[in-house]
Length: 203
Ligand SMILES: Nc1nc2c(c(=O)[nH]1)N[C@H]1C(S)=C(S)[C@@H](COP(=O)(O)O)O[C@H]1N2
Ligand SMILES: [Mo]
Image (cartoon, rainbow, N blue to C red; front, side):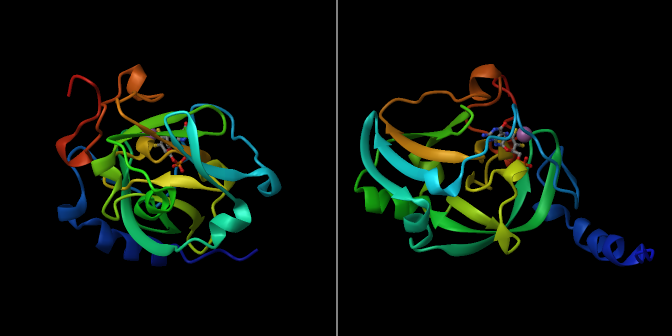
């Protein structure tokens, strides 16, 4: 094995990392991609994976993996911000806008609850997920998303703290009344805007 040149990545990274305008308060920039999961990584064979949109408990639409891949998708390059203070710049994803999913489902409601393999949930307002602000993504950096990072598919809501970007997402539930999700029930902020440091419920 040959030694890798140590200088290249750190040098390039550091130049980018000094841009303070894109770093929310209380955050630092990392080039790592930490894994933060509240439980074990669930495994969902693609043959049995599907994605659903519900109006409350009523199923509106459901796509198999193959069907989901035919939906209009786009590439997204974005910074992400974790409540544990790390931010990562220029992450590259590919997936389907929630605008598109709700158009196809033919419904809207003021609130959305994302539900996942493994039982994790997170809540969002419709306003926070429409207007090209949220995606169900299935590629990271040009490859299928690693299981630890939420593969086969995860939510990407980069303008909010990253706990809102639910990994292993399987369904979006349109609801009339807000329903706090996993971390939101455990003291994390209901809204989670990193620019306002909405970390915990008392913030
Ligand atoms: N299903 C599920 N999604 C989740 C989590 C989780 O524990 N389970 N952790 C959240 C938190 S707190 C963060 S910071 C990000 C971490 O994503 P990563 O592991 O890809 O960095 O996923 C979020 N989505
Ligand atoms: Mo997090």
